[in-house]
Length: 283
Image (cartoon, rainbow, N blue to C red):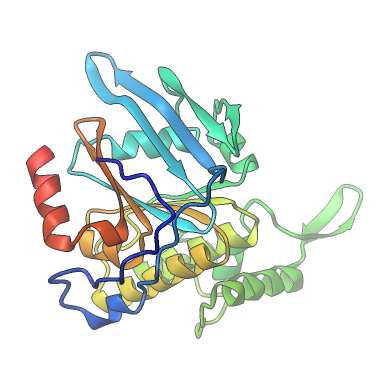
């Protein structure tokens, strides 16, 4: 069930059946086939992982391309979290291989993945609640002033970096940049985390349930920013339980079930009711 992109024109785009939300339809776009010879930004090749007697992943393969959103779907326990932690360098696979831009890579910690441009935004760790918007944007890359051992944060430059990051993603930030993370909404936190990742040069953006527990309007804004990241050339892997959200922005969809790849589709090859039934059947 893994259709191979061909050279024929794409069929007309169909809004997800039963989506019940016209604003989601606005994010749909005609999906081009993956160009022959295109090299994925990240590729997992027959990756397996077990924790003691519990098998989490079995021979999982997937590819994420620049300028495309890959939605990773599946029920609880399907292996989604384990897979993204492998991609993010949290722990290595037991078997199989990761390839970054066609070259085999081994990550022994998340810092090595970040150095390659893999930015992962986990659902509950999007921002530091005690820091300001500016400090969250520049966290770990703080601009400094001074000389020799006598250096301090260049707050003016940090504010400029924060404004630039938010503007680059199209975020209209109406609050002050000194607002602390604890005081901003879930949607604003996700938007801020995406802006931070893009500003500092990520080439792969991995988003773990970015719209979970958000109100409809907040979720819509986050989906807009995800689509904009894709349109600016990012490779995006979107992990979500919300099939409507996946179908509203994704170019490709991979379904995991019991640690294995159950199916792979281009978005215009499946509708909401078909996807829902499939995931329920293979879970």
